[in-house]
Length: 352
Figure (tube, one colour):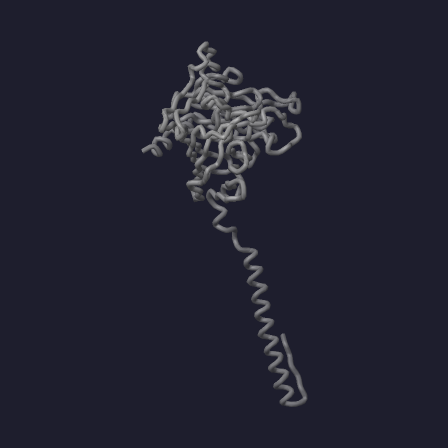
C-alpha cells in the first residue's frame, strides 16, 4: 500500500500526484510479471501432438507426440537414410556406426546406415557399398513434406548417379510415419524407380535392398562386447527361424532381441503388389535385415547368375512398397502376423 503525507495542501497534491503515478506504474509491472508467470505455466502446445516433421539443414526431423522417432538425412550423403530409429519406449533399434561412434559396436560394413533402400547392381553399377567407384543416390528435391495428426509424409525425388557422373535412373519415394502409441512405431516406405535415362537392369545379387542394420544387442550372433548375454532371434511368416531364414521367401520377417534390458523387435512387411512377392530375405546373424527381390541365384544357389535380373524398359517404371513395424516383445507378443493382415487391408485401401 502506498501512503503520502505533506504539511501543505499544494505539496500534498504534488506528492499525491507522484504517488498515483508510481502506483499505476507498479500495477502495470505486477500485471506483466503475472502474465509472464502464467505463460510459463501454460499447457504444452498442440503442435506437440501427432506427427511433426521439421526441416533442418541436411535432414528432416520426425517427432511423434513430441518424441523423436527418426531423422531423414538427404544432403551430402551416399544415399538418403533414416537415423536414428527409436522404437517402443524410445529404445534405439539400430546400430549407430558409422553415423556415430559408440563403444561396444562392431565397425563392419560402413554402408549399413540404419534404414535405407538401394541395390548392389543397377546397370552393373554398385549402389550398395561405399567402396571405390560406388554409385550415389542424390537428393533432387522434395515434392511434399507434411505434418499431421494421424500421419506425416515425406515425398522426395532422387537421381541414381554412377561414379563417373552418369545418371542411371531416378526415383520418387514416399515415407509415411504414423501416430501410434509409444509402445510401437509404424512407417510405410514406397519407391517408384523411373527408367528416365534408358533401360534399367536390377542385377541378380544378394547385396540389397530394403534394409535395416539393427542394434548390436539384437543380433542373433553376438559381437565380442555382448558375448555370453541373451541374443536376438529371427522368424518369418512361414515359421522358419534364425539362420534358416536367410535366402528364404516370406511375406514378412521379424527380428527381435534385447535392448537395454527389454525385448523389442522390428518386422518388415512385403506388399503383395511388389514384383516377385513374396520376397527373399537377406537377413544375417550380425544384424543386417533386408528384403531383396533380385538375388535369386545367390539365395537359391542357381548356376544362372542372371536368374534374378529385373529389367525396366526405357521410359517405364517399377514400384516397391514395404511396411516397417517396431514392437515390444517377440513376434507373438507383438502380434506380427495379425498386424501384417492389418497392413494388407490398409494397403488395399491406399491402392484404390
